[in-house]
Structure formats: structure tokens, C-alpha cells
Amino acid sequence: MTASSAGGAPPRILFIGRGESSHARNWIDLFKGSGFDVRLFSMPTGSPPDDWPVTTYVSQCPPVPGITPGSRVNLYPGNCAGQELRRFVARFGTLGQGNIAGRWLGRILAEWKPDVIQTIGIRYASYFLLHVRKNFVAGPVGKWVVQDWGPDLTMDRLLDEHRPRILEILHTCDGYFSDNAYNIEVARSLGLTEARTAPVGPVLATGGVDAAELRGLVRDAPSRRERRILWPKAYNCAQSTAYPVFEALKLCWERIAPCTVRMTAMSQEDIRLWFAALPDGIRRNCTLEGRIDRPELLQSLASSRVMLAPTLSDGMPNVLAEAMAMGTVPVVSPLAPITAHLDEENILFARNLYPDEIADALVRAMNDDALVDRMARTNMEKAPLLFDRARTREKMLSYYEGLAARAR
Image 1: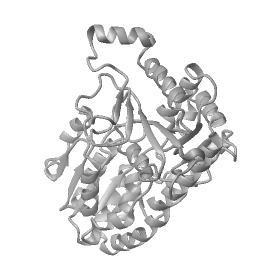
Image 2 (image 1 turned 30 degrees about the horizontal axis):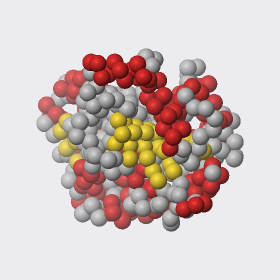
Image 3 (image 1 turned 30 degrees about the vertical axis):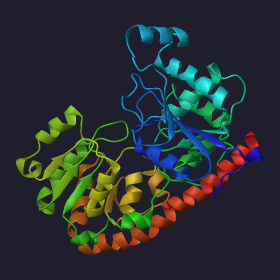
Image 4 (image 1 turned 90 degrees about the horizontal axis):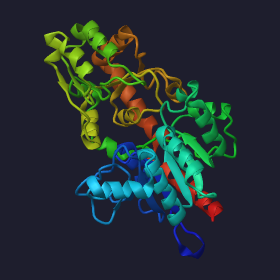
């Protein structure tokens, strides 16, 4: 499908999100070869890798050295110190980094005039654009679409400091979609109208999975793979806690050994401290790593027997969709955004705060060969039906063509 518009100028989409997020980049990559003119405004939290070719406005300070010539525009001067920085701040005002970036985004919107603006996530991208529209934009600029994933909406709405902004976003955006049906229901209960609900249904935050490509990484049914558990979220945050997993391993280790556990994204000192307190027999069979890049994660997922990711709050986890597509047995929590689409045929459920439930799920997953192979067959058939990337691309291109036409 190729985008078109009056006068031959391609529709313009400006994405606003975290350039360092592989989820955000994978979503934007849906639009490769579409005919849309696509750019990213990268939040001050980071920037994309040098080899990612999408034109990106980098608001991180200081700018990252060695970026790809021609595809990056920096907010801050290259010599982001001393007199150069003082002159720069004098031009943009001394209201703090968020407002300096906000002023810049306001100028970009006025000069580039995107037809569609998509904020990737409610916190913080949608909050940021709401602030910019109120303070640094004169008049309407483009159609605003909110992409919601995870617990940004479902949890933050409970807090007084977040709820007014969320309500304003849902009442003023031009389109809203999420990665699960539950979040869409919550948004509707908060006043999102039918007209503002994007007619695309739930779509995965990364844009979906290419099931054929992921199946190509798989060599064996789970019962014949290494006896390895991949735990890709070995950290503490508002959405999950690692401590019950440690307790679960102690409860069930004698029943699941021999096996290994690969723990990734483990960088917090307190988590490493409690890992060090585990019995020697468990520690010797575990590997601890920080964040790994997505291709390595997918390779590990394809060769592991179990993917372990219990959480307290979540949307539709991307790693769950990827595990299903590769026949890796998922152990996740029975949260409403997940159970709206999947059940016990697809997942071994375990609540994050209950070590005994996590332990029981691991015992079943590591010892019942018939169960894991049956679940793998079911999931490898269902994943393309729920999470197909090509279908998501088709729906989103059609939706954005319509929005762009209305914006002009």
C-alpha cells in the first residue's frame, strides 16, 4: 500500500517517544516503504542507535557523538558546555530541560506541519505533547493519535496527579488505540468517544510479530530444547517485582533441576544482592545480565523451554507474543489485559506476589513434556491470528491515510 495525497506530497507523520526504546522503533519501522514521510521526535531520555535511518529530532543533552549524518537533528549544540550552552539556553529560555525541548517541538510542529502526530505511550510522550500544545503551539497542528500500552492508563488514572491529564488527553486527542481490549474499555469508561477510538482493534506495541520469521529461529519442540528458563524482566519496578521469583526458585529447585535460568535486564544492586543470597546450587546454574539487544533475546527465547515473566500490571507483553510464536512456554500473571485474549490453553498463569504459584507453574513447565508440546502447537497457530505484523501494517496505513486526508 502506498500513501498518496493531493498534489503528490506524501502524508507526514511525526512520532513522539523514546528513541532508545526498541518497541518504539519497531513500531515506526511498520511504515518502511509505505510512502509516508515519517520522523521521530526523541524524548530527552535517549536517542536511537546510529544505524537506524529514520530522521530523528534528538532532544537528549548532551547530544550523542557519532550519530549518522543526515538523519539526526540535535536540539543542543555539539559543544554542550560552557559559553555555547549558555548562549543556547538564553535563546530557548531557562525553564528547564522539558520546556526547552517543548519549545523546540513547538517550532518543529509549526515549520514541518505534520498531518498526523502519534505519541507512543501516555506517560510520558502524551503528557509532553499535551504540555507543548498548551504552551508552545498556536492553533491546531495535525491529528493527534495516542498509542497506549502497558499500565500507563490503567494504573496512573488512580492517582490524583495523573488522572486530570489522562482525562484531558482522552477528551482532546483525535484517535486512541491500545495493545489490548481491556485498556480500550477503561479508556471508554473515562470518556473516550467512539469517534476517537481508532477502528484498528488491539494492536501489539511493537506492531506485531512476523510468525514465519520467528518460527525460522526454532529448532525443536520445547520438550527437546535445553532445560532453560528465560526470565527477561529480572528487575523491580511499579509493574513487577523480582523477589517472589527468587523465593519460587528456592521452593521448586529440587523438582525442576537440572536446569539453567537466564536472567536479563538485571542491573539493580538490590536485585543482585538478593540473588547473591540464593543457595549455591541455584546460583551456579543461573546467568545474570543487563539488557540485551532484541535479536539476542529472540535467539534465546527460541531455544529456551520456558519464558518466565510474572507482573503486577501490564498490557499485552511483547515477549509473550514472541514466546507464543516460537512455542516457548509462557509463565505470566493472569492480568485483565492478557486474559481478555488468552487462557490456560496458552499460558501457565502465576501471580507475581505468590512464590508458590510461580513455583508450581515452573514445575509443570519443566516436567510435563506432553503439556509443553501441546501448548507450543496451540500457540504457534494462535500467535499469527492475534499478533500478525503484516495485518497491523495494513490497518494502520489505511487509518493514517484517512487521518492525513482529514488534516489537509
